[in-house]
Image (cartoon, rainbow, N blue to C red; front, side, top):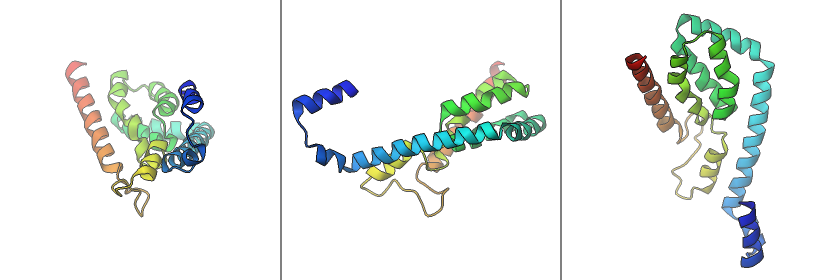
Length: 168
């Protein structure tokens, strides 16, 4: 991508001042800043409080292993990354002795990074939307990505648990 951008700059001679002031560029800069800032902060938070998370997750997993799904969803919202959530939280599931088939069924819950409107794509979508249909509401938990995302994750997890109970 960098090479393509360099070739465009050399051969097409675009007006760089217009690019920098465009809504797309502004949305991209905000998104990149939020992604790196939130990811770094949340990764530090998890590392500092790993013992507390292990204790809470352990008590929930002893009551009902499927409740670990909510740990995955909540941590995904805080970490704002499926990869970071998987790396930080899934080993806890194995350490707690949760059936690996159940962990696979719970895996779609790591996609709950949309719960808090802090991800780069969400902020970019709001910044670039001229129609007004993409929004972050008055309250933190009422934005246009939330309901479709929650429905998707719920259906995915329930379907996965159904498949696990059928095949495993």
